[in-house]
Length: 174
Image 1 (cartoon, rainbow, N blue to C red):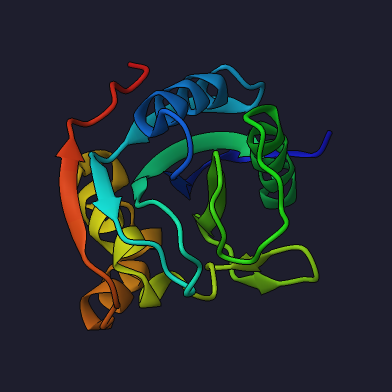
Image 2: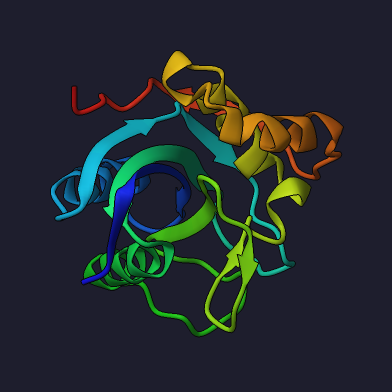
């Protein structure tokens, strides 16, 4: 497995089927236990209306700050495997899901491949990403120079959709 020096990555997480909060908490705990993950910190939980026009229940969303020695593609594969462990089925684009995990950004990386685009191409359009992301990036652990451009892009963004604070921050693994 290709490893890199520990870097920070930002992961969007959401769920709108089943016990949404319990799923997000359990997925966060499983992420903490993966090889190559050295720290996971969470924003608060936010309730958001779904996008894409599919009739479905509201989402709970959060953003996770992850410190990892996994390369971006390896981290993405781990996230996709976690989605499957929680019953994610990809049938309808922007449809309901038990768990959605998106690799939003990876410290020092900008790339576009068939499997991965960094930063995530639609993150600046979505309030359900930007509100918890802004909260997380305000913490001292995430005040690295690599995130300066991301902060500027967030400040300039005009996302759509409303968000409502629904829960306390999940505990970090410190």
